Length: 153
Image 1: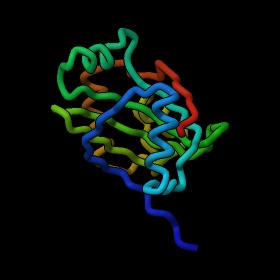
Image 2: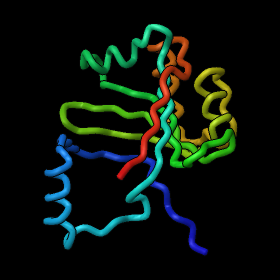
Image 3: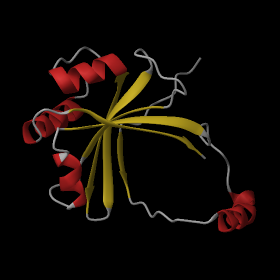
Image 4: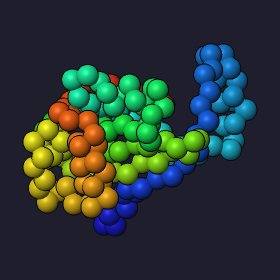
């Protein structure tokens, strides 16, 4: 069986819109013939965002200081466990271009890396490791600070 390739680096420009339900329903009807759902058309997403006790990283991002960075752990498991596949992601935005760098690991390994500086064999992407280390220097005491779960459609 062929293993699915996981994308680890992204560069994109996004435009987001807020729609009321009636507009969404009309848009879906008009676009239905042109849209094909992918493997993840609907999914549950769980995110853990890392920051320090003063929430300095998110404050800098909101104030548009630096690269508007965020550090998060994401999983698509509906009911994640410590062994679930997770992605450690660094998100940066410069002007209107978004960048995301990520590696594949598990919950325990990511938390140990971020909070204790312990990198096992799953923390192997050198770019992600370097970016995290720079964030750890800038924002001392990074730890799990916020959990956001949602169903994506």
